[in-house]
Length: 388
Image 1 (cartoon, helix red, strand yellow):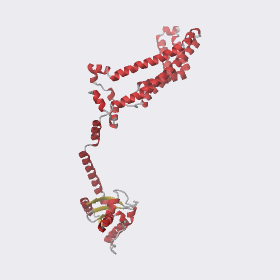
Image 2 (cartoon, one colour):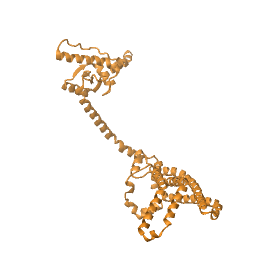
Image 3 (cartoon, one colour):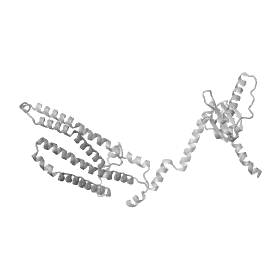
Image 4 (cartoon, one colour):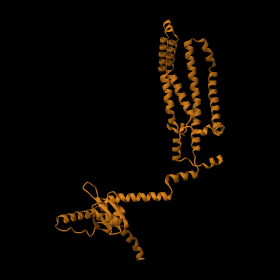
């Protein structure tokens, strides 16, 4: 059954699946990369700091082995000397140990990245089941890891043995050298051996990193049914999506109706279309704050009447605004002239109603480009059929 399930998992993991895996503490990791990075750093630091580190540690060791009668007779002095030597030893090793710690800390960024989660350390009682433990011990992954460990040990051990064997003559000659010279030669041999071992480890890393990434993504692969189910959970069923869109439209309409009290004029068709226009001196151009057809148009007109907003019958201008102007945006430049005529008339009408004088002339013909009025397009399309 497990094999059949694996065969069905043919689809790459989705972003949600990968994110859930990270939240569970499941990220790709390469032990070989971490070991290689720390070992390479250690070798580099030994080469760079080796002589100074050797002298510092040697001096501290010699100082610790020197005892005088006063220290032997006074335990407090001996303890103090030991504490001082321990601090000196720590300070001498601090650059080396600090370098290793920094590399160990930042190596995960190369594959998988940092992933701080408590789920990875939560107790899982299923792991206490002996049957499950035995099954994990003999699983394909456990056997693969065991085989990889054996191959790694054989490779590194073989390389180290080969290097030592090839340098056996120099090793045998160390016994005839003075102590200082012999120690220097020994350090050189150790550095040489470690460099070759690090090179061998690099080969392991080149194989292990792609392998770990492949196994990780293979383990998270999904079936087509899982992808469909996840998509359904994220986006919802068609009924739910339709309900969400309906609620969004209703919310947008409520916001739109709330903008009507600030409009200067409502342009109508007179009943099929209604568009509320707003303009003030600090605006670049008039803007549409509400628009609608049929029942919504009636609601806009009623709201305008309630708030004493002037209503003006201009069919072609209303249609052009409805189809070519967006809510909350400047109207198209081609409609500036018609808007100026309407707003000027409304302004003159308010002055006349408040102060008297000459009544403004109603703009019978607004300058609306024919291509912006959908009725003109319908008439143009109908003419060839009528002629035929």
